[in-house]
Amino acid sequence: MVVDLAVVGMPFWVLSGLWMWWEIKPARAAGAIFALLGCGIFGLLLASI
Image 1 (cartoon, rainbow, N blue to C red):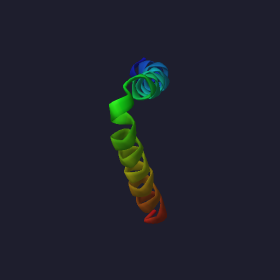
Image 2 (image 1 turned 180 degrees about the vertical axis):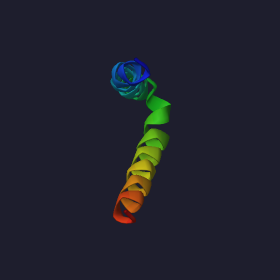
Image 3 (image 1 turned 90 degrees about the horizontal axis):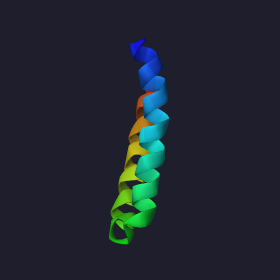
């Protein structure tokens, strides 16, 4: 049950974050930097498996 809620909640969380990022223009640069940083960290963790 908890996993099902997480599966439903995470896409909503991602989509709402992207929508807010698009609507709040001053946050776009910082959001893009943090998104790239997060993808880089994910790549490093994935490579260390």
